[in-house]
Image (cartoon, rainbow, N blue to C red; front, side, top):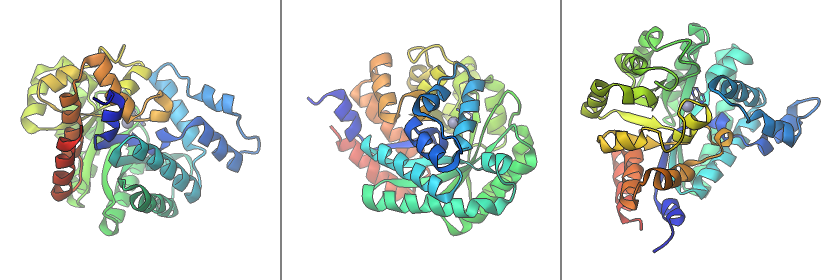
Amino acid sequence: MSDIHSFIRRLPKAELHLHLEGTVTPATLVELSQRHDATPITLPEAEALYHFTDFTGFLLAFKAVSERLITPGDYELAAWRMSQHLAEQGVVHAEVYISVGVIYHWRNPDPDCFDPIFAGLERARLRAENELGLTLYWILDAVRHFPLDEAEKVFRKAAELHASHPSVIGIGLGGDERRCGSEPFRDMYARAREAGLRLTNHAGETTGPEAIWEALSIGSERLGHALSTIRDPKLIEHLKAQNICLELNPTSNVRTGVCPSFREHPLRQYFDAGLLVTINSDDPAFFGSDLAGEYALAHSEQGFSRAELRQLAANSIRASFLPDVTKRSWLSQITEAH
Ligand code: ADE
Ligand code: ZN
């Protein structure tokens, strides 16, 4: 019998909730700072940035990293390093959030300023596919608590790029749910769907189940975090009946202070209730975990057996936006992994 860590590594897995900006390690941040800052930050300063204690502190750290991702080359570097790390963990496919809302808000309001950055991301994606056998899709993420017209620009850019680049698969909404729910985005989600984009949404991370109902009511197909689902039995029944995917991020929730410990995360209860749960790493460089780490913690903290870990991996492929034929191929390889 091989040990659990090598079993986890060999399991073909998909990451469905991963922010590119959140994969930038302190060492890479120093490198980016050396490219851009008159007085570059030191490694201890970069490490200190990642030591937040609550959700607001986390959002500030996320902003500090985003501010140093500037050129197409910066994005290409970040996406390539992210891909290498994913491949090392046995991740075969990732659907990666790009915080385009942050770019428009903090750096440049011109919607087309994203085009050269996207070209850099695509270079990294193609290299990852060729050299690592890892496939990537992009999900363009707006920030819900920024002005609505900025989200509108993000989603329009997503629709425009999707028409010529199938790698742009969908849209998402991150940011602070306590400051803005989903209702204001109803029409934008409808238009994104008409453009052929898939609809994801952060919901119920720092807010109650009502925010999850609201996210569902505007057509969200996959829910990020959905931590507060556990407080609403009717919602659990509904998610099960509709086979809605939950993109859970247990370590992220512990580190941003919205869940007391991995052991107390409702992952196990959702899984046992038969929901389509996936585990994900969200912002792994910030939280000191990665996808393989989340699988290992599911095993050690919540008693997930090998068969159950296999089920989590299968869920990640099923809930991905990959074509059915590709899903079938990965699912049969998951069955065979030992
Ligand atoms: N952006 C990056 N990570 C996020 C999270 N966990 N919640 C909301 N917005 C985010
Ligand atoms: Zn997230």
